Structure formats: structure tokens, C-alpha cells
Image: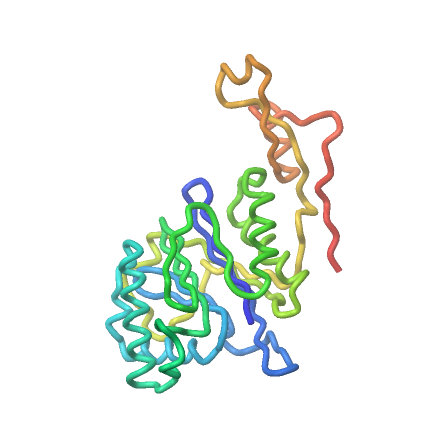
Length: 266
């Protein structure tokens, strides 16, 4: 199984996943080319469920199937992509058992992420768009709870994505490091890779172990508006120690006794 997390924060979008693969009572994390982040022509795609679907997507990628050209500009485009995918599974792969479901059904769930949008695809192929963040797969409840609690406190989308993935790995036996995270940038798209459908290169950041928020602490800072500052309104945020020091002369104010947000991991 797999944990997938996508976060949109301050105009930047991130997608991350673990690398754990299970087979019965066994698991492994050292699969060759084992990243679960797939790069299509106009979006990143990640899936949780049967790894067989990764083989199918790779095969369709190498044969330059029309679904690889999908622009993913809106929810309808995403739905069309998965209609095409489902049709291929039935027609050419004979991997879908028909007659047992009222609607189309795929065991896997998906996240489709563009530089501006986050879409989730459920097992029955229903598509939903998320404004701030989304989590799918094993441990998704833990990841979403983590994101709900930290989204307005942590400014960095990469950190939010990482900590949400770590929370799933901490509580779910079906998730495990290493964690791959990519920032979804418009400059990444426009053409298909010549050799592989997996995200790779400098755009992918890999974390081999959990680090939590141990290098961060809570600080209070004045409201950006003069009116808010005059009324004494403050906003609590979480910053790195270095950022807290540099912001002392700016709008962020470090309290005399900063609340510790340190967490430990084994």
C-alpha cells in the first residue's frame, strides 16, 4: 500500500509518496525505479493500490497512448483520462472484472497534480478537486489530520507535505520511508520524457528517515495590516530557527518563551 499527499500553499504545489511495496506479509522499499511519482506530459500522477497499474501506465506511456496527451486543465479532463484508462484495462489488459459493480471500478486511488490544481480520483473513478491539500491511500486519515492541524501554522508547502507523509508512516503499518516529494512547476511540463514515466532528477527530493518538526519552533508575529497591529491582533506560525532569527527586525516577533514544537522519532 501507499500514502500519497498533495499540498498547495502560497502559490506552490507539492506531491509526495512513500516507497513501500507489500506482498502478503512481506514488504520492501528498495525496488529499482521505485518512486511512485509519475510524470505525464501535463501533470504528475501517483497511485495507491495494486502496483500492477503502475506497469499498465508504464506500458501506455511507452506506447504513447492518447491519455498521455491529456491537458488536465479541469476536472472533466481528469475524468476523461481515467475513462480512457479504464477502457484500456478492459480492452487490452483484461484486468478488470466486470459485472460486479454498478459503475466502473478500479481498486487503486489516485492523485493528479498540476502546477495549479490538485485532483483526487476514487476507486469508482469519481474525480474531486481540492483547494488546499489532499491525502490518499494507507494512513490518509493520519496525514489529513496532520495537514488540518498544521496548514495555517507552517508556511512551507514542502515541510507540510513531508510531515503529513511522516505521520502516515508513523501510525500505519502499510507506509514506510523513503519519501519522495516533488514541487509541481509549469516548467516541468510540455513534453514526455524520452525513456521513463517516473519523476526524477533535481526536482525530486527524497527523505530517507523522519525528522518531524524538530528544527522548528512556534513564534508570534504581528498582523500584516496596520489596523490589525493597532488592535493587537497576532498570528502564530511555525518557522525554522534561522528564519526566526532573521525576522526579528521584520514582522515576525519571537516571544520570550517560544512554545516548543519539537517531536521525536525513532
